[in-house]
Length: 120
Image 1 (cartoon, rainbow, N blue to C red):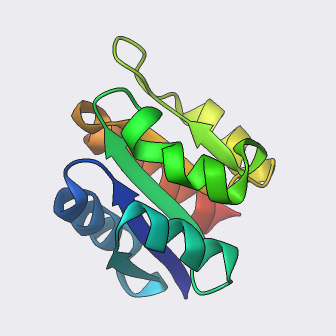
Image 2 (image 1 turned 30 degrees about the vertical axis):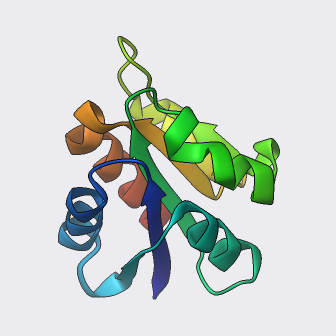
C-alpha cells in the first residue's frame, strides 16, 4: 500500500479523491495541513506528499520544501505550464517524494503522479 498525504493550499478533497480514484486499493490517502503532511513523509508515516495551489510551488510545496528539502520536491506545473508525463516520471525516478501543481491541472497532474509511482 502506497501512503499519500495531501497538503497544499486549495482543493485538497478533489486531489485526495482523484488519488483514490486512480490508485484504488493500492493507495491510502489522508488530508492534512501542510506541516503535518510534510512531517508524515519525513517521519515515515507517509510515502508521498501531493499539494495544489494557484502557482504550483508556493502554497503547494512551501512547507514540504522547508521540511523535506527542495531536493525531495518537484513543481510539476505552474500557470501557463501544464504538467508533462515524462517530467513527472523523471521526478519519481530521481526520488522526489513531494509534488506540487496548480489546481487547474489536477485532472492531468494527479494521474501522472499516481501512475508514475505505481509503475515504480
